[in-house]
Each structure stands twice: as C-alpha cells, then as structure tokens.
Image (tube, rainbow over all chains, first blue to last red):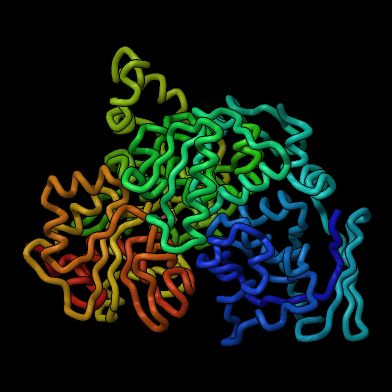
Length: 175
Length: 428
Ligand code: SF4
C-alpha cells in the first residue's frame, strides 16, 4: 500500500480538468516517469501557475469536480510520479476517481463545508496531512493549528487500494 | 418497479457484485486507440500476461495522430500494431483505413443495442446512441477489459432528459447538446447515465444522436443513451440482416431494452427546443454557452470542422451547404477532417470535398488531429478557433489558444465571415 501522508498543494478552483493536470501533447509518452515535469503545466489560478509549487508536496486539496474531461490515466500517473498519492476534494469526475483507485491511489471526497474550512484555515500556509487509512482519519496540521477529519472509503475502493490496484485485484478474482 | 435501459443492460451483464452498488459487468466490445492502449499493453507484457480475453471483441484504431508525426507517435502506433498481430486481432484500422474511433466503429457496425462497451477514451459515451451502455475508462480499466473482458461500475443512476418542441432552421443536435450542458453544467450529470428521450430525439438521425451522446461526458455523465428504434434498425440493418428475419423482428427485440414506464430516475429534465438558438461556447468550459448572436463579431483565425462530435457526412453536408459558391475570409485557415474514409469518399462522391476546397479549406485525412492539439492545426498562443469539436479547455488545441465550440453550420458561416456569426446570414 502506498503512503498517503504529505505536504499539501491547495488548488482553489472547481472543475480542474485533466488537460490542465497533464496536457494532451504529452500523451505520446510511453512511460509514466516521463510525465513528471509537466504536471499542472496548463493550470492557471488567479493568473499564476501552481506548477511551481509541486516540489515536496504529497497531497492535493481542491474543490468540486476535480479531474473532469479526458479519460487519460496520465493525470493520476502525473500526480503519482510527483509523489502525490492522495487528492482530497469536494467531488471528482467519475473516470478520474476510478483511475486513482485503479492505480491504488486515494481520492477522498469531503463535504463542501469541510473543504471550505480547510481552505480558510490552511491555504497559503505550510500544511501537512497525516492519513490513518486504517482508522479513516486525516490529521491536518499547519501554522500551529490542527484539524481531524474522518472520511469514508467504500469497501470496494479499500480493497483496490490494499491490492495495489484493479489489475491485481481483477487478476486474482476473475477468470 | 420497472427498470431503465441502462439497468436492464447491467442486469444482463452482471458477473459480480463485490460490494455495495459496485457491479462488475461483462463486456461485448473493448475499443482501443494508440494514445491510451500502449501503456496497458506494456504493463500486460511486463506482467507476463500478453493475451486478450477475446480477439473478436477487441476493435483497434490508430486515430489520434495519424499518419505518425514523430518518433514517439510512430512508436505508439507500432506497439498497437504489433500487439494486434500477436493477439490475432483482426479488426485493426491503420493508415488509409482509419478514422476517428467514435465515428468508424459505429460505421463498421460494431455497436449494437444492449451492448456493453468500454474504451480508454472519454467520448466512448457516443456509442450510447445505439442503445448501448458505453463508457470511457482509464488505462487500468482498459487493461483489465482487454485481459478479462470485465469492468466495474456503480449500478447506473439515470438522468432523463426529455427533449421537446421543434428545432428552428439553422439549429442542430450540436446546439441542443450545448444548450443542455449550458443548463445543467459540467458537473450536472456526474456519475449518471443521461437518457435522451422525446420527440426531438425520435426524429433525429443516428448521426445526430451520436452528437448528443458524444457530449454527455461534458456534463460529467458516464454515458449518454438513446432508445433503439426503427432509425437504429435501419442504420444497422446491413450488419444484422442475417440475425433477424425482418426489420420488424429486430425492432421488437431491441425495444425490449427501452426503459419501463415505471422506471426510477435520479432526475428528469425537460428541455424545450422551440426557442433554442444556435449556440457557441465563450470560455474554457463546455457549459459556458451563449447564443451565437451574442458572440457575433468575434474574430477567428482558424475554423475546424471534424472530430467524433461533428465530422460525419451529415455535418459535412450542412457545412458545404453554407460554403457552396463562397470563399472563406482571407485571414481564416479553414480545416476540414472527414471523420472516416467512408465519410471522405461519400463527401467526394457528393461533390462536398470540392465545395470545401473551392472555398479555401484544407482537407485532411481522417484523424482526431487538431481536436486535441496534437497535430494538423495546433493553435498558436492568442489564436482563436471556431470548432465543431467537443472541448474548449484551456490549451486543448494548443497552448494559449481559444476554442469556441459550435455546430458545423455556424463554423462554416464563421469561416466565410472571418468572425463568429450565425449561419442564417448565408441562407440562400
Ligand atoms: S476527435 Fe477529439 S474528442 Fe473525439 S476521440 Fe478524437 S481527440 Fe477525442
């Protein structure tokens, strides 16, 4: 199982699409590692490009409908090869969410108020999320503050994470 | 309680229910293209599992960048080609016989009512036009689909959109779907199946239904779906005529799939098209939609007519009707990409290609090309494209470029005017 704790990259916008996570022109790469430099290349938030802030981050916290658009699994791969194994959002586009779990990564939805609270308390500050996957608990710390938030993961998603992804899971289970 | 068409399809394909509302369903078709499949193939090879669940049910095309533009895209094609040979996959469409996946597979009769279809491509929802459950998936789902012939989904929740009224002249399926997405938003149907019903859909051709279903994903939907009817039977007849004694018997069989009258919906939306005007997007999200007249005068550098949304013969006919006897504005680069070789040769026969060329359009081979900004018409920073495609995301057609989505009629009219404008102004 992967590590789901790390420093937070806040992306304060809804509907961030997979073209913004990894532009189509990099889809010609045949290895995941080659995607590393291009994560969030085309994303602009308030006229600045958050791709400069990726270094050292392990968790993304964002708003609604994250990962909409193209089905490209290059989006979770680009996150993964940058050490980001967990995205916390108000909601996800279906394919992106499924792709995360299929890769053994975590995509967790929290209610809008919780997301608001995280942004208002921590955005712009050095923030760390400690994930206790067994207890379904995030401990979010930054700037002397600490918030604990419990989360839910369905049994099926949990077994995908534990199996290391859908290929291993399906290979064991289906003829 | 009755069932929706998607529920009926699920129930007849369910092989496992690992937990909650997750169902693992068997697949009737797995479609592949050269962008998302090679990494799945490489992974299967590295696992020592270089095999496929059923070579007959796997259909493969090279469409996104074709002919290859550089060594990397050439390698993607090669991986796919070699894999198809190794695994005895007969339905493989390479240069000269290839076209945009969601146009060529229906044209070959590979999608039937009641089918379950996946592909590593978000616009796989297009195939729901045939009364199939067709969904875009990522590479890992594709990999498992190729190996095992199954895929996991939440049991479908359906949003029914009842489309009523009469389309005005110059208003097409593309305007209808842009209007719907403008109304429900890019997140409006996330995780749901959109069922398109009503008198407007009933009178639509298969091509127009494919345009509707194609953009279901732009509202977040897993799939779009239309009920199979006599139009579906007519379209498929040449492929199914040996399986049914008559068109009527095929119709009776297919219509068993139609949602029961007491089926339960998550949402029912009424969409009346009586007052619908030609639509265009103005921002970087497909739900940022306005009537064309409110964008009139927006200068365009490029006009692109093609893609899995609007590169079919009907679309080319509509555009040619506007372009006939006219020249596109000098500063406009017009590009038309017939979606399949079949569309291309039909357009030649009908004199449509000549109309495009006489008007000053460049005619490309069938390919996704400019639609995703990888080849054949990439925009420069600051340039604007009037496009019949389905995505206007920032950077989609080239970094810093702006894409306005619209119907082929509006795109053709905008090519002539040099700015976004209503096709009505070119009415003969
Ligand atoms: S034409 Fe565009 S949207 Fe359609 S499959 Fe190709 S790249 Fe995707």
